[in-house]
Length: 240
Image (cartoon, rainbow, N blue to C red; front, side, top):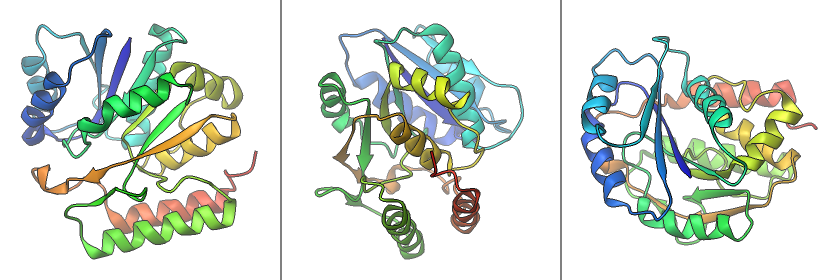
């Protein structure tokens, strides 16, 4: 089984494109779409139910807006209650900026024994199609700082688009008691660090980030997220 875990917050304008891309991608394995809604105030959940009728999908929503980390953790908890260790979880953005053309390569690497496969704009062959200079600059500085200070060996620390083995998620839960505690976008760094602490085999696949496919602004606030990274650093969560 492949579980697609997709956090959603006011993404109604992007969901038609997301549906088209997901349903064009073919798999010989069973697919279950998990939409973890983060308190959307538009008609995102209603549109998901209309678009994915006839598909294997679940919408998780408590009506609260707590951030993508909370949405991811809700989804991971649901999956771990319903999955087997041989299953895998694909996490990606709801705004269609994740490039599904590299998903089969990511799946192949997962099948070769990599517990965590990351899409990477910084790996050779990756990059940004259309992103502001400020966002690229802050992203590059943050990635360099954390890699340098804490000897993290991967290039991209914060991408949503990943494949996890369920067995790795179970190890993280057993070791830390939860998959995610950070509610904001820094949750991706937290999961990566926890994966490293669980001796995960990790590999990156280059990806072009197609921001022009997104309709409307990004939900990530660059300066706020940067402050959360420094707060995460101050907590010392890189220590085992």
